[in-house]
Image (tube, rainbow, N blue to C red; front, side):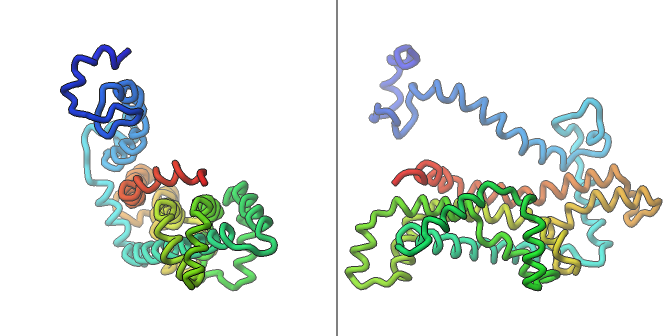
Length: 315
């Protein structure tokens, strides 16, 4: 119906392709915009709230009824955050360095481990292949909190407590990453691999020259998932590390509100003017700092993620 109403204006759109999915704008797409634009606004609300809360003064953070948007933006939350970190025994640059190093090593290692395992499970023939993949699928059912105690016992037996590697090894192999990459590699034609083997290519060369270039969208998706798991991880610093210099930025920023509230309850004040109210403002600023890298990474790689979601289930 909409297309009929706008049919007299079709000659002004300059679109030659009138198929199901035209390459440019076409009036038949208006019905999708009517539905998707309001939905996109709803999806953006959490991001707007995080940004808005970081710049809210104390009276707006505790205003009733709550205010969604900031009225009088201020940088006081960020200055309080810098003041708080400057009084700590460990400089914030140390926490930031730990987080960056852990994230980079984890993302790179996870991509290598997941992609090589997925290649073996998808294209190689060996005993227990189906059972190993079934175990990986069963692991998808367990949330991290359900395996906290077994994971702690394993880490203790491996003598990794209070060790830098304890941040990396527990999240190195992600079941969802192996599952997604395996499904994606299943779509690579066996004939391509067989032709490479006839030409004398080794498994390593096939993996590097054929498999990796053909699964780049899936690799980008795994990079995002691993980045989020490593960058936002506070479990390792909380449960397995006692040395403050080995802890990450996510853990430190997560403890700011608790520390401020404890100081106020005990009658002490590590930061001039610090109380539970200031702690909430500092936490809001810290939440924005932790959120921005996730947003940037997703924006840069979102096209690859969409490609993965649309092709991972097809052979």
